[in-house]
Length: 262
Image 1 (cartoon, rainbow, N blue to C red):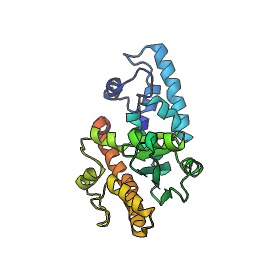
Image 2: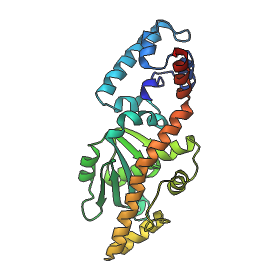
Image 3: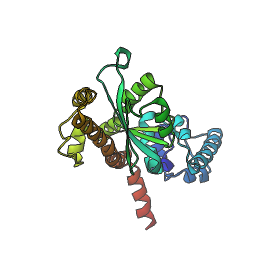
Image 4: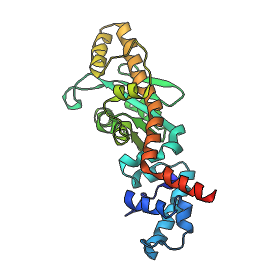
């Protein structure tokens, strides 16, 4: 999808992007090879050509930061297809209090499509360990992470993520899916084990309180709950990406070109 994206160009919004698609300019290469575009003056066209050449270079180098700086956060979903192999899903649990009032992170779960890792307070959860682990990835996937998880990590541990961030909460809304993570999972048929089905964030707080008082079963259930929250984001991300791509309208224009060529 990112190769169809012209909103990385300053002054090009979704409306002008669709206008370009309608004219048959569907890829960066199409734009560069088109000598004149009526609604873009010659000077801007030259600058845009240079930016797109630069974009292709950064994409080949696997540098999402170039695009993250040029796209609105809500458009970072467009990078999914190119960076999903370097993506990590993140979900945190806390003790239930705000970070400014005694709140702290209890568990940070990470899943990259191959394996799940849990960093637990009092064991291996530290700013150093988390920064080191996150530095392995270029693309972050969360559910409302831009509103909760990442601000909480920044304020409590000083941990940030410098790459692109696909927040599925807002992506789901744009794709017509309403409700929280569990409701959307049910709607799309993404399963959870019976042991954690029905649990929510408040249950995670209670499980932590029991775990720190020596309840091993509560500890294991908390980790299992976080694991499903994190692992299921991976499956959900692909589904929401496909819906957002369809909503963008690009498929209709691509299909029109294929029908014309055939």
